[in-house]
Image (cartoon, rainbow, N blue to C red; front, top):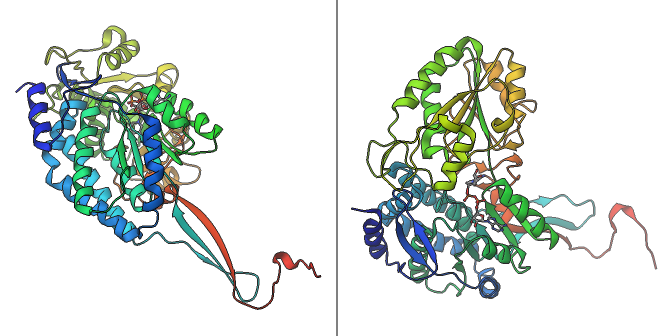
Length: 486
Ligand code: NAD
């Protein structure tokens, strides 16, 4: 079946109408049009979200969790068709599409449990007969701006938490992946219908490109802007939100490294490198882009990786033995070509799609394009002699998302994780830098934006903290022992 035919049949199965409107969705598999969607009015979405917030914030959190539980059920039931649509629209292989939907299900489960655990502290007061505590209250409408490469999971990471925290959600998906957003919204609508009494405007979808995104970003009614995408996008969005004293959660680009030490289990490292450098055709924020290898093992490892890269199957992401699908579009191909020049190896898979062989580039120094995130499968290999040098190389880039070390030396592993070790939001030992679990907080430092979403206590970003002091005595002692007698 052609991508267009397959998309039409999945959309019908999921009850989505995607044949009208100005925003065209193309499949990276062959470049063909697979659907069209309509944009919506950002100001109207913000108005409806504020109205929904007034009711939703008073619904008990465990009851709000029930809505997310129902969403998880809908996602479980539709896992396969939704994953296939992710593959058709983003070009990632079906196994990764299934993994992405599983991640949505996992965060729903997490958020349901969380809906009974949104607790604050009780704090010892310095005054007698006083009690101090902090409460976490709903924040307000949350805007989710998402990137093409995780077209559905990023929304779920944000929406599941935002909803149990008592906030309405407006989603501005990537203009490159509008159909998967429509499909997820249709599933959400089913969950809302089963839930029964959720306010109108609680979960909204606003399709469109950068301009629509900017209008929402500037709207003072949006309490939190959670934006996932390139550092260039974050550089534009961050100051605009700050200008109006809104809250921003930025999840931006990465330039992730792996250090391979002399004691490393090389067979394990090879597998981790192949998945994290070539998987999703190098289009993950956590993709491995820099390999920092000890000179004693470099020749052996690089030779083996060259072999693996030369043989990894690049092609139609719907075929079960394909490991590397197409790049998202021509501009991604051009970006890779700018770096590699004539060394770029285009794979003749399906006409209309941009299929490339993952590239391994041995770099003399960490300079020029090695410092940038080129959103394509290019892995730079650098050599090191002293461990300090490896650590320095790991950290000496503008981005700070994910990092990994392969070593069987406890001292090296612990130094990598220490305060003087990796400066990234994610640091792994003997696993690659990509493929995070939802239980941990996800995000990175420096040009990656500093935001954290998903697990651990990331939920706090979606709530406002209130400190309360209660006097249950008959005196009015002042703090710091101040006397102010009348
Ligand atoms: P992109 O920056 O081109 O677009 C991302 C989203 O931002 C889209 O929805 C786009 O319409 C919107 N946007 C762009 N400019 C905007 C503006 N000025 N105002 C409001 N909205 C705007 O990114 P992309 O090509 O879709 O995705 C790839 C990038 O995303 C890579 O850099 C990758 O590392 C990053 N990414 C980061 C994470 C993370 O969690 N850190 C996850 C996925 C992707």
